[in-house]
Structures are given as structure tokens and as C-alpha cells.
Length: 363
Image (cartoon, rainbow, N blue to C red; front, side, top):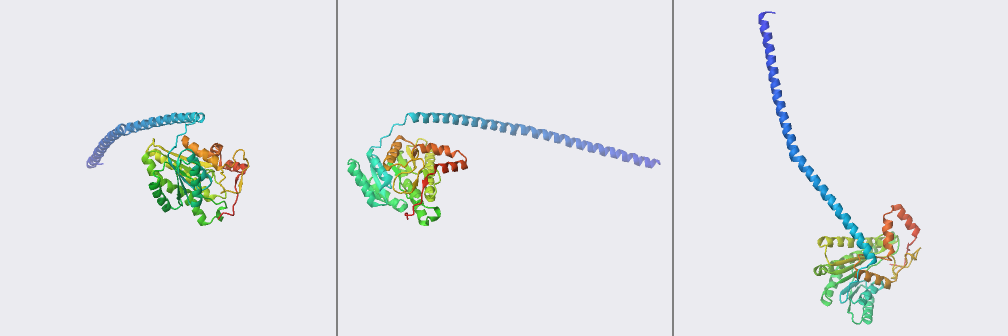
């Protein structure tokens, strides 16, 4: 190897060393800047993200614990109140001189409710689609309680135009309504596929929509006074399916849901509102509408007379109770059955062997 070759080789070696040193310097600078940036990012993350998130998490945990504690205390006090009220019922409020409206007052339990309200001192507006039967109820009130005022209104509650006209008459002839008893209803006892379309429509519009139209008409004046009673007649069929009464059962489930939703809505708007809502669920009342009934244990669940049912309903309304079953044991039976598995519920239904038979005489 000559001298020139040595110089070239040495130059290449020096060049490689310089390049290598330069690359190392660049890499070290890059690594240093990356480490600094990473450290900066981690510090920012530690400062700006971890602490606030952790603090927010602790805050939410504290709020949740406080809410749970408050709920448990409130629930405990409510159970205590219920036990106290069981042994010391509330004093019945006077309804003397109040104006009451009873729908379906022409016969059955509606007539007895109108008479019971009059017996307790309320003036009564009797509303029914059958004017002849309605007049009989009104005359009986006037003859039995001469000091009580009574009026008759002929109205089909399933027709909202009829309801609007009826309330115009009530407004000018009677004044404000303080007590509403939504009782009007109809039914057909036959298998679902044997129900005609107009029968299904009549049941739903009368039983459910009729109550909605009436409540919608009377509620504004009650809210403005911050006082009033709304009683809705549901049924045992509003808590458990009843064969041969599918449309009727649907309407009664709807009434139960309607009253629950209305109660919650009024409570959200004003927790101290003065309106009292009550849902009544009788097992069987001897109104003449149901003929082929079957009851295995009449000692527990027997048919009730309209007179006794009316006394129970008005008495509970005056006491401020929200849920009423007739007989009262039905409330506990349904509450227990509902927490059981569905197949066990069906076995209990088979064991009870009670229900409504088919009535082919109904149109």
C-alpha cells in the first residue's frame, strides 16, 4: 500500500469517526429533548389530570354515600310511619259541603258511592250515560238526604266532546268540583278472539280514556286551589291478568299506571301539593255485570256488596290512603306473589282456581 492510499484510508477513517460523533451528538440531543418532553408531559398529566380526576372521583363517592345514607334513614322512618299508622289510623277528614262528581252513578257501585258521599255531607253530581238510571240515583239522594244538593248530567265519558259539554254545564250550574270519583266502566266476559272490534274500542275508551278525559277536565281547578280528591276505580284485573277479560284487564292496568304517573308528576312539581289521589282495586263487587264467577276460597276472597265497598272507599279517601284493595288481604297476597318466580305465580293461580266464566249474553 503506497503513501497515497494510506492518506485516503486515514481520511475515510477520520470521516467515519466525525460522522459517527456527529450522529451520536444528534441522537443525544434528540434523546435529551425527548426525555425532557416526556418528563414535562408526565408532570403536566400528573398535575392537570390525575389530581382533578381523583378529586372528582372522591367527591362522587362522598355524594353517593351520603345519598345512600339519606335513603336508608328515610326508608327506615317511612316503615316506622307505616307501622304507627297501622295501629293509629289517620283521622278522617271532613268532606261536609264539598262538591263531588261520580261517574257511572246510575247503578251498582256508582250509585252507592254517590249515596255514601251524600251521607258524609257532600253535594253530588251524578254523571251517567243512562239518564233514567241516573235520575233514580239523584232522586234517592234527595229523598234520603234532603239537606244535600244533587244534580244529574247525562254524558258518555268515552266521548271527549260530551265531557267538554258536561263540564261547561257543571261549571255554570254547580261550580268547582272538589271530589272526583272515576267509576264509569264496562266489560265483556268472553275469549279475546270473540271480542268484536267495537267492543274492544268501547271498553278501552270508556274505562281508560274516559277517566283521562274527566281528570283532564277537573285537574286544573284542583291545582289552582291546591286541594282536591281524585279516586280512580281500577280492579284486581289491573294487577294480574284475568282470562276472558283481556281488553278489560288492559284498561285496568292502564288506570293503575295512569294514577301512579300522575301522582309522581304532581309530586315532582310540588312535593307539598294538597291533592289526594287514590286507586281502588276490588276483587269482585256484586254489580250485576259479572254473572259466571268462580271462587274457590270465599272465606278469603269473597264477592263484596256495593254498599260495603262504597263505605270502604269513601272511608279510605277521607283517611288519605293512596291504595285500596277490597278485601284488604288482596294487597298482601299480590305483594307476596309478585316477588315469586313466574312459574310459581302460575302454580298459585292454578291452586286458587278462581276466575270469571264466559258470558255469551253480553253484546
